[in-house]
Length: 64
Image 1 (cartoon, rainbow, N blue to C red):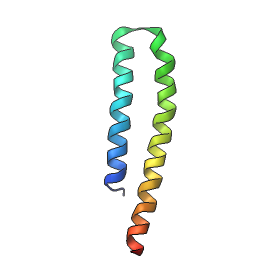
Image 2 (cartoon, rainbow, N blue to C red):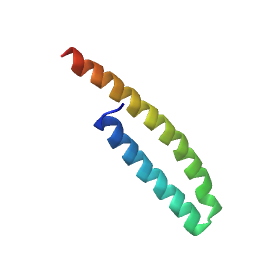
Image 3 (cartoon, helix red, strand yellow):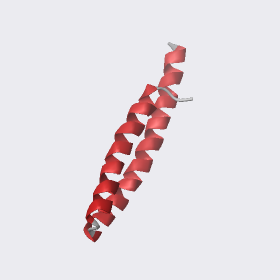
Image 4 (cartoon, one colour):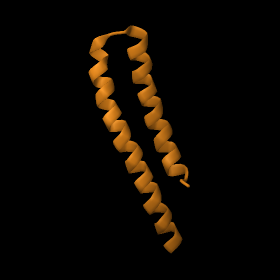
């Protein structure tokens, strides 16, 4: 249902979030919990923005 635009965004945001999660798990440092939570909000926003961009870009290409 989505194209490469969403794929690129989802992979990029997913890898970054995975980096935060692995660092938090591996170190067990409580100081990483808040930045991980903060990025989770950015992650969700980024996924929705990529999905919206993907949707409207495909519509624009249909018109052209």
